[in-house]
Amino acid sequence: MNHILLRHRDIPDINKLDVYKKNGGIDAFKKAVTKMQPTEVTEVIKNSNLRGRGGAGFPTGMKWSFIDNKNWPHYVVANADESEPGTFKDRELMESNPFQFLEGLAIASYAVGATAAYVYLRGEFWQVAAFLDEKILEMEKAGYLGDNLFGTEYSLKIFTHLGAGAYICGEETALLESLEGKRGQPRVRPPFPPSFGLYGKPTIINNVETFANVPPIIANGADWYKSMGTADSAGVKLFSLSGRVRKPGNYELPFGTTFRQLIYEYGGGVQEGRPVKAIMPDRDRRHCQRRLDHQQDYSFLQA
Image (cartoon, rainbow, N blue to C red; front, side):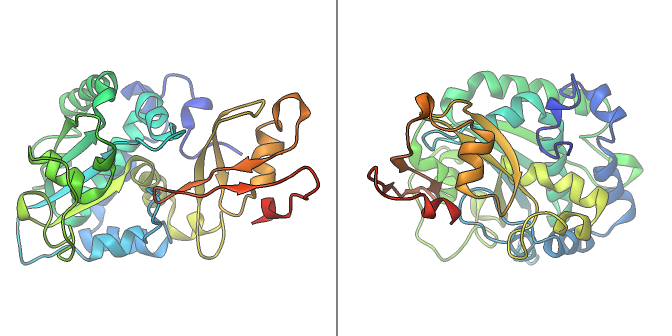
């Protein structure tokens, strides 16, 4: 099965705009802007059952539908902070398949009527930010960002912003505070960002992996996406596998994959053939650890 997100593993040089375009890139953004109403785009994402990949798993299309259309302007922010220990999936996407991420960000911006979008990166990602700036400039020169896109009245600018390496800025409201030039501290909620976000205006925030899922969904439809994964969690997920395994790295797998499969089928098992003693899965910034002694079985790996 070809990758949906890690397409650079199947298509060499897809981080070059001409190669990305030859392989269907930008088509979904053009389709959205020229053939669909913003609400239609949101409805497709809602019907696809795409959930946010930042940890909480909130339905993406539902979040977009919460945008306050009585208060303007609107903004979209990509959370590229990725400061959780052992997580490096978003960085691979930005470095190796950047245009799919940026196209997804652009589609989301159109869906909620935003004409400015921001990519918030952790402070240590200054090289990634510089790389994305180059890719954004390429899209502008090609006419895929800027004014009157595809001959329509829709316009969009994308900007990058570096934080200062504060872990708490991975939380979306602390991220907004930092983006505004303030100390990165979480806000009291409600109100929530779709009604009161960046500069007090309605704002949609998703992470890099979430946006990277958007172009193939718009291109292929919600039913295609729901054909993968589970009934509650459709599609594929990027798993950053690290620690004492033989083959650490990022793995793109459908939801429903077990820990046993991830560790043994894809990760090659534990180094030196030793048994698993503990797993620390990261979800919503809460780290949980299950310990085993040598006599226990691996039944929890089926969870």
